Image (cartoon, rainbow over all chains, first blue to last red; front, top):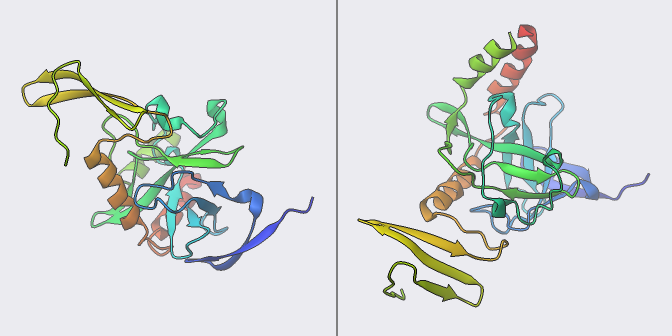
Length: 152
Length: 80
């Protein structure tokens, strides 16, 4: 089936062709990035652990995102129901959860407090501010050995 | 800033669709109940601002910074 392609400028990968149907819509943008409504997820083949959420309309804006459960198998998002408004989720299985990556002096961190919840079917996303004591900058370095122990 | 005095169980209404009620007052802590349409986000200000800052800071990250993640995920299958 032919799908409509669009060419977008990206900060890390130059000019990229993406399918229009691959665009995610964030009706509220994100805190600090309120005007960034259309995003695409770019996953470099040589680095599948990290994807880049690239703003379609602002080439200079891209966030590194990872699947939090890859590092923290027990990670659960607790949030008010109203936070899920507009995501049109019919079942939890339709949701994909990603978290943004940042770097602090101590190394890479994950924003566990405000995960991105995406309806994979309808391609609507939202950055949710979760309940409870989750870190905005959760140090990643310590978590990987823990995950490895579980696998081993 | 508009400043209004309210007692417990009293409310203010903003626009015609947001109601803020004083639910409880204990010492210097006030509990607020907020009724607003679901499409209006409501957050604790300091938390919202922390997420704003974090998002803007995270924009500075580049593929070079995440190289360690690639190494980690490559190492993981060996442990399986």
